[in-house]
Length: 418
Image (cartoon, rainbow, N blue to C red):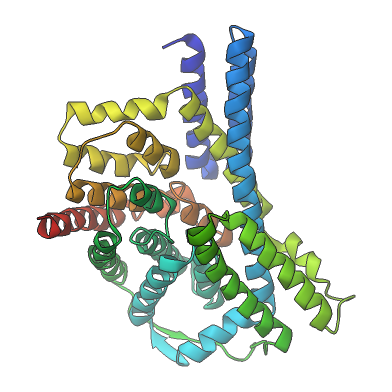
């Protein structure tokens, strides 16, 4: 390993440490990862030994930026939708219609788990997390209890998406590679849901209170808000359908949906001057977008220098089941998309049960750390007090639920394999 590669790995480690010790340094995690992410790529350009290598760096950087731009625009669209619906009282309306005036904290926790799991099965993880966290925040729970709900949201959203090709990119990648079939993935949802319910049960210990739904400050949703809600859910449906039928990128469909929202609200809103629809873009968390930018620059750099590809050597050193499990743990630190891509490119020979186990591992393993998945990063941006360390306090419970889910998925795979 060259001096430059050592320096780049050190930068990646420092970026992660900056996120972990944010509460100690009082430096925003988005600033730290953006600094080291940009610095790492600059070092790659400067240290290029010749023009040919510099062109390779340029090509890799352009590809990295293109992926990030797509995610940025997608996040902007979904966050703007949710910000508008929340301001217009649509999120609260769902709470008031579904939940009684009083409900036990334990029951509410299980209902939250079911909602997140089901919603993320057909919606993307980011959208599911935004909506779920908006629902949790509307309950106005004390921070200690809100942290438990947020932890469950992250794990449930990642678990729900892993069993459907519409819910998780890595699941879609493994399916398109011909490693698993749709029916096998559907069966994967059973142990995944069991792991979610197990985590909900453990988090519910000691939560014996009652949540009172405050209806006094209810904002009555207007006709425009209801119409925008329909546009939102139709956009989610169209995103799934058009992606499957015509390979239209989800970002493009969501931006089209956002434009329809703008046009509809502009035509129907009575107070366009006092409440312009475009102003809702200002309500999104740009710090979250900067954090995504920085962390994906770091991951892109690691992919370019071959760190992710070298991880496949683990399969030559240990049993496949254990290697799959370790890949799940690594996905809590490394983006699961390039990690899965590297594994698929290596042409690993695995049974259906082992591919199902890997699908679960890389899809849910990111839940172990708050920075390990898009759901965690979005949740962290929505709830003040949800930090790396506050989330890490539940690591033992998350790890246990993950292990049970992983083994159960592998067991189901063994049972259905002829």
